[in-house]
Image (tube, rainbow, N blue to C red; front, side):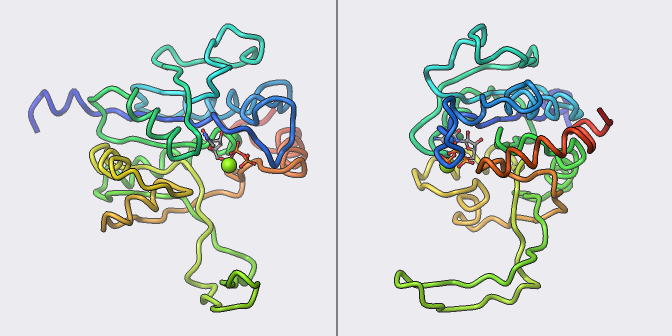
Length: 240
Ligand code: CTP
Ligand code: MG
């Protein structure tokens, strides 16, 4: 490896926080809803800041919240390397906007949902390590506890996948930057980035996720996250 290549070793992180949070139904976009007094995105950024080797961070937010000096941002510590950009109409468009703002020079790019605000640093580190070990794409996942049915539009079951083979996947999802950029160049929309990368024929590895990487989606999830923060470990691994 040349010195030029060695210098380009670093982790770029895109934190997507531009969703409206329609299922949560709060009066501010979900990533700016407060959990233990700070916006969800502040908690997510705490874990990003605790992750080794992060060279640049892009935070993708609703266009009306672009100004980090605004009141909704109080309690958020933006890393010095962070850039804030406006998101798009769906998650895929928001990731693409974040990727466009992420400079060159990283060997790993992570995409993380601000809504997974309690994801432990250890999950970030596992994903980075697995990309550096050679995977094109890496997602954290946990075993599924329910039996999952595939249904048709009338609700009739068309298949019952074997539960043993199923994983519920989380974020951060990690990629070699050129792989993720190529995946987003296709203009396809998907609910996660790995789906786009898989569609290009790349192999995506599932590493161990964590129950704390739950996605805050409904008011019940927010209440659960409050309880976890009150009594459980923080994203950086310590205790409150
Ligand atoms: N997201 C985004 N841009 C969008 C939609 C979603 O950046 N246009 C982000 C959200 O802010 C969130 C993550 O993608 O951190 C996962 O999306 P989801 O949990 O679905 O959040 P929302 O779209 O905000 O919620 P809902 O679907 O209930 O409206
Ligand atoms: Mg959504």
